[in-house]
View 1 (cartoon, rainbow, N blue to C red):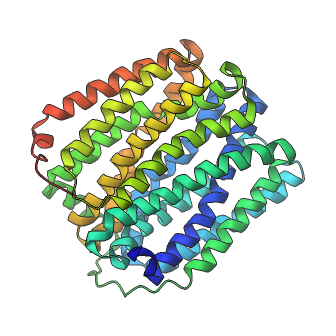
View 2 (view 1 turned 90 degrees about the vertical axis):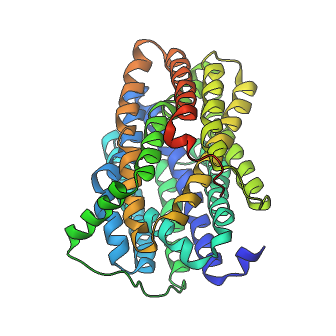
View 3 (view 1 turned 60 degrees about the horizontal axis):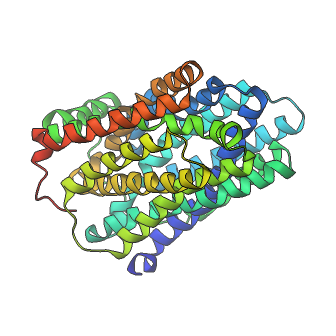
Length: 399
């Protein structure tokens, strides 16, 4: 494949794959450890809030830094910082000094660093691959993320059954350090963006949304969509342990099913290089996701749930990959870091509320009622978008 003949892309991909695998192992271990220690939806929701809240708090500042500083240094420094932090918490866990809230703090810190790393990757890709390869590059990136989520949860479940939490932190910490070393060898051209005072750069980023209304409306649509899709993540440990009685291995399989669907669509988009109708890849996936949520909420059985989770994953992947490639094409290169920061704010702003409400309503009316209600609302959102004037204007545009 032409993409992998590029040295910079190959180095970025290898470094990410190593760190993503460790990150996936860490995620399933932390979710299982917290739920097993507390048996509380609110505790697992707190972990998910800790993942998303930094994007809301720091997104505009992180994106602006990505546009002002050397992007390779941000990639390397972010991975090394996360590796060191995890090794520190591994020591605390080994000495028995870890509790639920310290794990929440660790997750918050890791996510805060990621608010720099992720916009940097988003901004770097258009400068190391050709324009016509952006969909394929984002598909490979998405495939790597999901490959790690397929392998990682399964490995994480097995390791949690055999070892203590500190061993998982050590594995993840070392993976981030290896990733940082790999990224040291990426070569990027110096940024030609015009420099202004820091807060003026932030204001210029917001001005981009004001001048191009389609950007704001598309991102707002996905922010609202996320509000109704993320509750499933809070309830997966409950389904694995209490409904289907499959334990940590079941948790890993359920999370892996979502990733398998995402991987399948990523491979399809990488190999299928024909232009795609942008309106269809934006509107159809939410309708599919909503219908799947309606069925999952009725508890169809473990095997059927795995299939539905894979379909949900494929639909999410199609939506994400298409949107990222579209934004990378239409947003000026000098604004890519800020744009990704603001994208994270608008998309993630509703997620902490969603996690909190999912934990609260899950304990009140039950996860099944919450999921079926979310499925109905997602379907309505997709139907609304189909007739919304701005989305009608997307007809005929391709990616």
